[in-house]
Image (cartoon, rainbow, N blue to C red):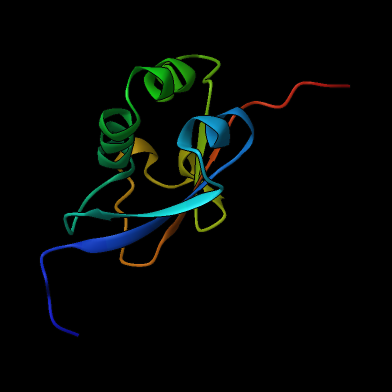
Length: 100
């Protein structure tokens, strides 16, 4: 496969984040070597203030407003925000679920 200088990442949005994104799943292009933190910064830029408000500071807050899964695994059990993404990865953004 030819290296085009970009990689495609699939991002799935759930609950309130899906409403902001306007779609259940979208594909974005990042530079090779991009991390989950890079993706968050890209999404904040792409979707603007409403997304940034909804996301909060997921890697700094004690009770984050969203969690990131990469290929079904919580990034807290990988390399956190420094988790490197690869071509074709599926990243799921999950807001907290309340209930009982």
